[in-house]
Image (cartoon, rainbow, N blue to C red; front, side, top):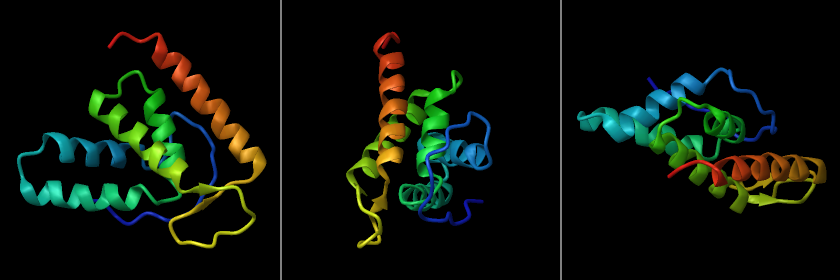
Length: 125
């Protein structure tokens, strides 16, 4: 139900993309499913997702969706926080957990995150 994801990637922001439904299904299973086996599978998928190449794009896309739930918002904000903490401004990756970002990609990430923060600063809680 939750196949493995690839690691590494680029910051391309889209609101309709492959994997978004899969991420939403895993989050729904993790936070709302009564079946422990399904929650365990979802947990493993989501842990792998945090270090996948799809993490940036899908997290940002889900945060932009008006239909996203509060647990989807929380998970995606946490996922971006994890990825930012693992990001380095270098030309090559030295550690498996690190995300290598060029100066242009850092700027793009900053601009997207500022826009999202501005949006959420006006949203009711």
